[in-house]
Length: 222
Image (spheres, rainbow, N blue to C red):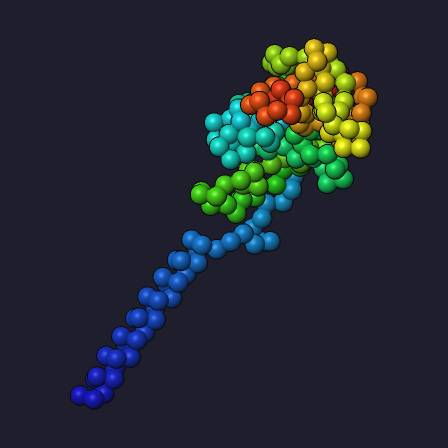
């Protein structure tokens, strides 16, 4: 009888061990992270599509409205058509993509770049710009037409009213005498006395008393 009880206990322990091992393996298979062995290798690709700002896309407008993306043509052979990929500048280029590629917004382009099929480590709750798959741009061409109907701004970089030379706050003064803050424009153009002409998208700002009428997202400097 004692031998029988020992056999039953031993068999029960073996069964429990097997169940625990199986459940642990199943859990690991569901939660394991990407390792060097299963990361997709970077590949050079060529894609065609329309450049869009995040705020103009249904998904990205909620968490990354100011970044630039390419909406890939449906006929693209390498990456499925209709997909959206964030544009990023090469590592040796200090200018961010929203500034460097602003002039291509709403244009049909052909991009040569590096794509790496990575699964972003993001939760569905705290999404940000780093959550999107991206293309590291090497070359960008505009063989197609532009859909942009943005207005043209002309003027000069000047100090805001009532700011002395020592405390000069630079802004863009257009030909009509209105001051605007500029966004997505190279820093070396924001120099007092620089004459500029560009297309852009104006976002009016409430009257704050500083004389600035709004913020212009620069699309293309002429």
